[in-house]
Image 1: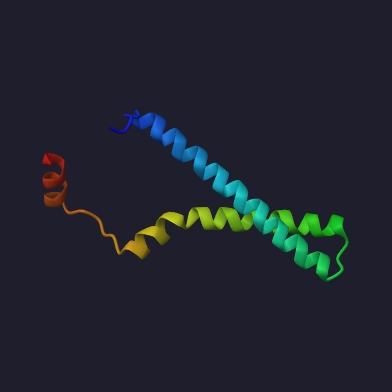
Image 2: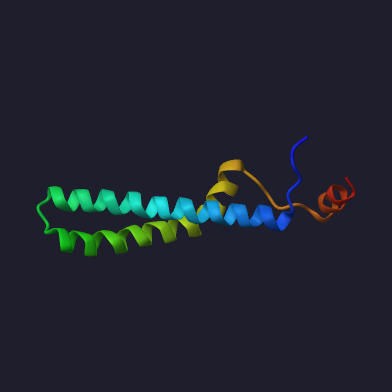
Length: 90
């Protein structure tokens, strides 16, 4: 039988995983932009100054559209009042 976890603990675990994923994506995008700038011959200090804001903007935009993307991908829709009542009794 799986161990029971409080809802608050589940939320904290999910938030921690979300932060780790965001930091990983920030580092990955930073490395990609930095590498492209390095290949183009841009000095490393300038490449870092360009890469960090670009990576940060990418993470913020992807995070802000994540919920809408999942809803669209699963073709989910809002519940009607009848469906909400039916689901609450189950």
